[in-house]
Length: 146
Image (cartoon, rainbow, N blue to C red; front, side, top):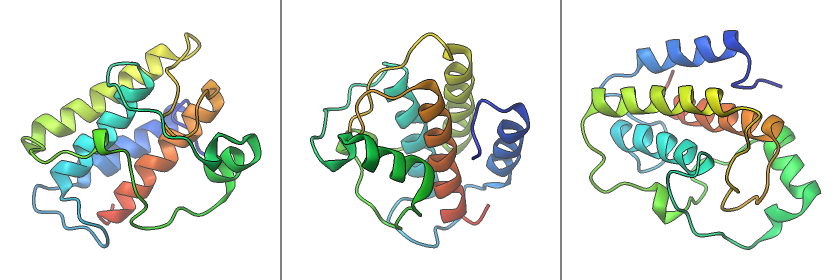
């Protein structure tokens, strides 16, 4: 399974990020490219404890369900997200791209030091965070054709 902890995988994500343009259009969903960049950075900021996101009770706190979603199941298009990770005024494209790269760098630097709980999944291991973050970025990059 792909993970942000692998330097080659991270490099591939960074290359895909570089292919996005301010006028990139989604294949599904309502986010524009700037909102998607802010959303992805916000999710990593949640992991880093930099962005407060209200815990959401539900089935994903169950170990088996959590494992299935993080590692095995395909992710549905248009799945709901925490309102704290949606941005009405998402900012400027290049600034959002730089912020996403900086958040990814902070995630990698934080490995082994612990992360905040995930709003839907609860406590995650470094292995879980690495895979989940890769899958989240991959999901949204595919949404925008990169």
